[in-house]
Amino acid sequence: MLFKNIPGLEESKAQLIQAVKNNHVAHAQMFLGQPGGGNLAMALAFATYLNCDNPGDEDACGVCPTCQKNQKFIHPDVHFVFPVGATKKVTGSDVVSTSFLKEWRGFLLQSAFGNLEKWAEFFGGENKQLNISKEESRQIIKQLALKSYEGKYKIMVIWHPENMNISSANGILKILEEPPAKTVFLLVGYDLEKIISTIISRTQIFNIPPFEDEAVQGYVLEHFEVDDGKAKQIAHLAKGDINVIEELISGVENNSHEWFRDWMRGCFTKDLTKLVKLSDQFHGMNKVAQKSVLHYALQMFRESLLKVAGNEDMLRLTGAESTFIENFSKVMDFDKIAVFVQEIEQDFYYLERNASAKMIFLDLSLKIARQLR
Ligand SMILES: [Zn+2]
Image (cartoon, rainbow, N blue to C red; front, side, top):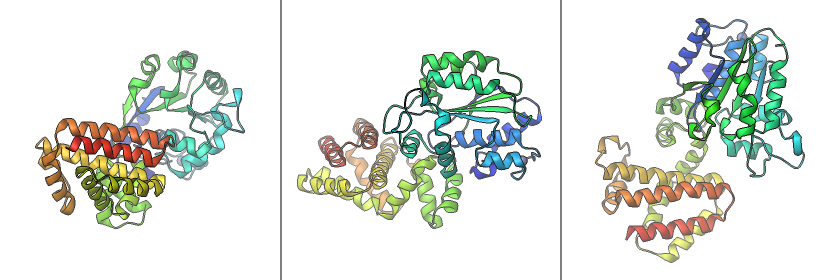
């Protein structure tokens, strides 16, 4: 990963490079950001920069032998720890990151913006709770005790420290506080409230802001075949989360708005036959399309909230969507919208855990119908 592979975030990139130039690289840093944001990618690009043989003013060279290894995530001095769970092949004390390195590299090569669900799907983690175990902390100490192979920094990237329990966290407190020379910990976290406080207090927090719409738009244009207008619309809906782009594109292509409008009409008139029919349609979609329907609904409810709150200058919708929100917000208030948003967020969770899509959708529709009247 190179800095130039990450859209936007120019200020954060400059700060990291400046720290290297000033010889002020903190030995334990937490790259904190939102899901689907740039924090993992930034940690990977920083690791590449730190070990590059010929680093430039804005990025690693990308061509030296260490850069080449880092771009494939096979540099011997760059270690990775991430949440894992037992699979059919890997069980017991083998359930540690090093047993899944091949899958991890494949996952990163596909996208460095993925989340835990996508990771579990990628390595076949069977929806179980993923952990960074106590055994893992022993491995961390063991790996860092070795001399660096290529003479520069030894780097330990820990993805999702939220998934460390007390005993695995305790296992690395000492080394996190006083790592061996030329060793750098790069933790990549998303939610400080879920990270054990003794870990947080031993790291320097580096906040990675969400991607701006423009950066996401550029990313969409580069990676997907859509025109400027659609890319702009998707960037607006994505709210900085690169992970949801695929779902959003599917939504735009499937006329989400018409579908949503039809659905809300069914809820408003309490047309049960129609709602059952829509639930069947929803059930027949693939998971990407189902999530896209929910994302779109979430977006429309949030826009209604802005309208209800009188924040009209923040509305960036046009055409049919704008007319819809205009009318819809007349029958909405804060409490109703809050209930909808909460319900939908929960439904993402249920969908992810393979609950019946038809039941999820029908239940949601009935709740909305009840609130609307
Ligand atoms: Zn290089």
